[in-house]
Length: 481
Image 1: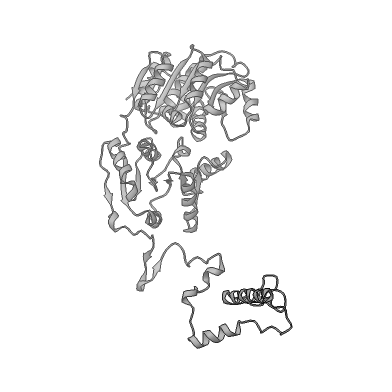
Image 2: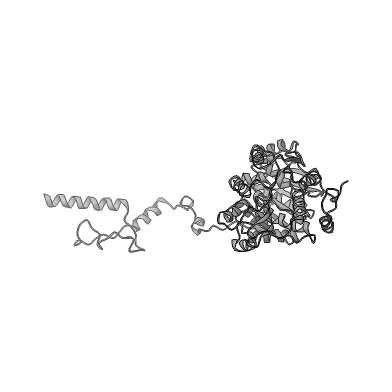
């Protein structure tokens, strides 16, 4: 079994790795590091949790240790592009952890969603490693705040996700700004046609390293499917979370709104949970991740995009509350557990509308997932029958209608009296006979009783209006005669 020293890394860097607890390289590190130390470009097909951050980070650190002096102002010697803020933060922490005391490496995070001022200040002094999301970095380059002409190392991590998010333009523009005198490393979980085209444009005679076949999942992850109606999922989730074995759980939702809804329901049902998605501020997302990693929050609810880059140790379970639209995202989701040789459990809740998505996932991972539950018998209400026929559910009492008028009995439900009583009521509603000296065709007081400006009085009925009209017409005929 090879060691990091056998891969050709300098001894100070190996000592830092050992002090940080890294002793044995992974498969992708063994295959990639020797060639990257020689300056070759590389195309890596690697799933999350395979150790690819060290595969590209360690050779870059080794090269930086050999460079004299400091980086020039407003420039970076190495640029690492990541699709999401969370992944960029994880890479930054890993790079500084790998370097340890071997070299004082200066790093800067260039991310959207936070102030540009502090980022520009750090870049102005010059940095060794810049970890950035493409959109924010492109803005700074366009504004003349960053010069990439001095950059010698370019890494595209999770390039497939960057292309899915529409960053193909900024990625190519940034690579062009660096120039051809660079070493480029491209990592992707899949080898889609657009990734092949991008690799052809950016890489020069690359070494191809495939740490795991496309669509494969970690063997030590126990994958299960529970069939449940859409409205029954909340009850099923509560039953799962009642098991203390679910110590640290990530729950995936397909949409931002869905993630907020699941988090709210969990809070109502007595579970401590935090949510991360694109609508959250960077500070809120970092606070949620920190609380989850420290154990203050047992549950983290996330969307696919926001969860990319989450590398929290000890995640025991991943629960897919909703299946992803893209089957490849399933592989990324469950990869949050079972990392670095540990075991994990992935549970997927599937309703009738998601059966086709489940089949797509099984085709991608080339295996049939064990299924429990009967969708045709699934409780679609999410409420279980309690003792003595009582029903219990997440709510202790029915909702109170906001409009009190909705509680009034409908007209059809009112008690109807006898015909005589109804006639008597109608008789009382008739206006009093007018005096003989009152003008014909008009009521005694000038307006029909019950007009809007005189509340409390009764309106004329249709028959009364017709009778008044007939009297007026009769009066006119008499005057003409």
